[in-house]
Length: 430
Length: 207
Image 1: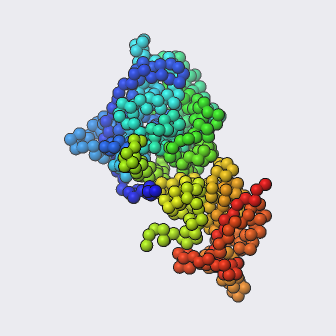
Image 2: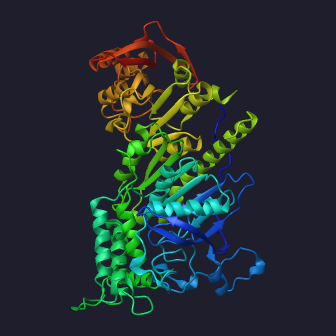
């Protein structure tokens, strides 16, 4: 039996940027949803990084979280052009970021790399020199793919709350259709953190023959009551905003206050007691003494207000409702009688990572998945990464994740190539 | 010299005892050397449990599956006889609940293979007897105050320990190791005195 040992291993410091990335899109016809509704046409916005191998065996699908989009890494083409990038110089681009100063207080129009730039790129955990990476904006999203802010062809108006409820499985089904269009039959890996991790898990359950491995990070197999509760508070803030207008606010005043409050609550759940103490403490912003008034004075208040406001400039309140509902409904068990049964007889290789200070999707929830997989004899690896950054650690701890992800992906690719070679040599088709 | 020759001698002995194609669980699997050899030489279906991040990363890099977990919390994820063989190599002395760990091994595995340093070895006895100090040796290389080894045993004590936990020792291989663990010879003469390492194949005595 061959050894599937990774031979290629690069040091962490040898990392680069995925460069300038164009946004692409295509249209998928006739998408039937879990609710029974059918969407006639679904626009899917996506980006790709790296090069698909001739054998088409190095494709990795990245699934984004609640507030993410298709832009995982590198620089958006439009942003880069605005910042002085010359297309004739190739995809390499290094904007001057020093002018932006504190990234938490940067102006909304400051150029920013993709949301998982520390994780995806040359030499990074998902090495774009080795792998072909695809990420699409989810169904129901607001960053290009069809969602509640899209125009309903039957009325000529934005869908608003007429948009059907979508599930994590619906998002995954649309991604599968996207891969069909791109001619990718089988993924080396499907991965994501948080809601992206739920999609990765759903992929492995729904399409076990289309994924060699599942890399699920800081995620859960179903939301606990506490997480549903936080989502409900966020939704209540949006639904109670006087500008909400039953979701038909497009073109008029938008429910920005409600969406900002939802985002502020979300942000609290993404941090930790320790990270908030370190980052803000009880420090006051721009003042020496208490104001004895209801103005923003603590650093943490200022941070949350800024995060809330910035979010409303780029995110649709209706999409926030749909995304949180999709998460609340998610249960990896599906129709099976237990999680273990749902995951049995799977040849997928699994790697789950959790973070010690993540209290939104705590380690025990990852362990429940791991234990279910172990009980059915699956090939599963798991590690809890020590980090003070709470749930956000999956975005902020690229090096600690690299340590596990790099060898995992390299060994899965080596095994895929070995079994493909064996299949060819024995004359059988896989 | 092949990679197999570099494998610790007690691990090489374990490989010889594992039937081809076995389902094996390696508790405290370190960097996965034993797991890799069992897979590549014996065609075994192997799984590992380990605590140390560096070791976990190394095991994953070998294309093997490893879960970060504390052995003292048991093996609840696995059903009875989920494995043919459960290995506990040079780890019995570091767990907090050795009896619980042994019972869990015998529950989820048809057989357990254990190796451990023999505290009854003459050098250890002599160290304490003549120097009046806690023994420090090649196989037990720690000072008493910073040792991870919190449950030392002798070969004789081990037999009682297995019996008390409803186990049966099927095979006992006392080893005299040399060359920094590179070589191991079976030590049948006065094993509790002359074997520095012991290997035992254990199974459950049943209900």
